[in-house]
Image (cartoon, rainbow, N blue to C red; front, top):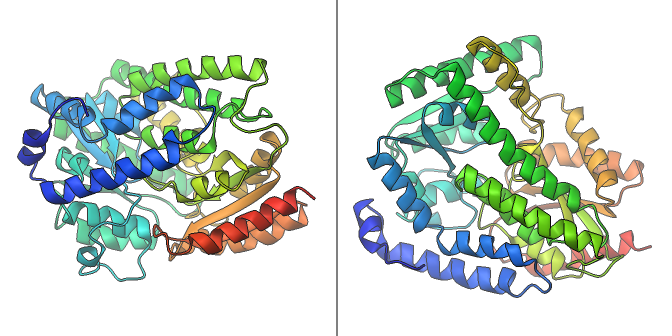
Length: 426
């Protein structure tokens, strides 16, 4: 970091000793995994900058924005429409955590067999190491999986202002009506928080901002289909992770600049790995920063991750919001239509997700699919078991992995990853 932010962190009520330990571990991990990569595109220096200031400049921007009257809204899920937050003159940031911290404290309130993402997020709060939580004026949870639904009852005891939206579990007419109703109620809550009504023009502008951010990520995704791929899966994952908390305008500009460099690399046949190396698609649970474990393991084994079917991946960024409406009702309908297409494992039935995995495997020329789930994440664990059989029948090699944030199983996982890589080369 270029500045000393200690006073700011202290003013947010953070545990400075714990926070220093976290930043030291994060810096070491980033150096070992990211900065050691060969043939990285020059424009990935933007990612290095973002990580170096992850709890510094970006938090200062949030603090300054709040001082100027803006509201910061923290969220845990891709189902929360950023368009509504921006239209209310707010800033939306993701709060999910991807590393074990203060686990023993979190387990005083959550069962040990809670998924790592939920437990880690509470651990970051209890350990006093997440300035994003402390800089939020309101936090929005969503009733997706049962684990989150019940965990939010605990989270409310530790967060400033907590608001929950309900998410349907079936893609029916009534399900879509429920989602629209919840988005309308969220709009009202955001208007109450900001003290101003959301205007049609402001919502149309917000839709454009978020659509442009998605377009930039999708532009990058298409470039990963090249052989050799011009960027690593690790760097691509990081881009999908910072999508949720970086300034959207700056993010869009920088990712498009990166794509310009990647397009030149593709035209010149330059890649981060030799042409013809094994290509894997990862499908399943979201991977919140700094959960880089699986990508690092795969790419250190001589293969490359070419796509993610995940909320921190194509599931979270594909599909735009139709901005042609001229009334608030039309725009809310368009937002609902877009978010209702997300094929999260909470939905039943969910054949759309299986078909999308097949489409992605073909689009990105994947030699195999890694079906990834966090331990105790029942929706993805159950869904991935059935998908494994169907993908194998379709001739797509599959590795199903259930893991957590620890490093205890890395040796075992590396052996299994190498086996699926070898299968793809036969």
